[in-house]
Amino acid sequence: MKAITKNVLLDKAREMGLKGLSKKKKHEIIYAIQLAEGNTDCFKRIPDCAIEDCLYRAECV
Image (cartoon, rainbow, N blue to C red):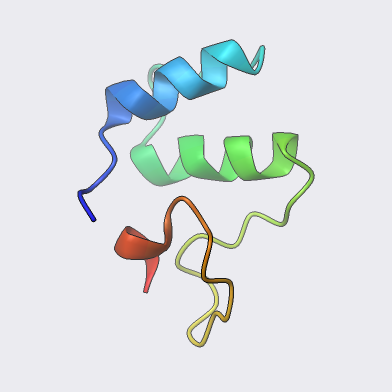
């Protein structure tokens, strides 16, 4: 799986109605998206994550 670019994340965030993220770091954008989706902002915070279908898994574990 390829790494997700910051631009792809910003596009996704805009589609979700999230604003003010363009100057944020990539992981901060991911946290914002995760929270907006109703998930925990867990990117790179859970060493033994068992969630296989996560969009960010390839970069996370």
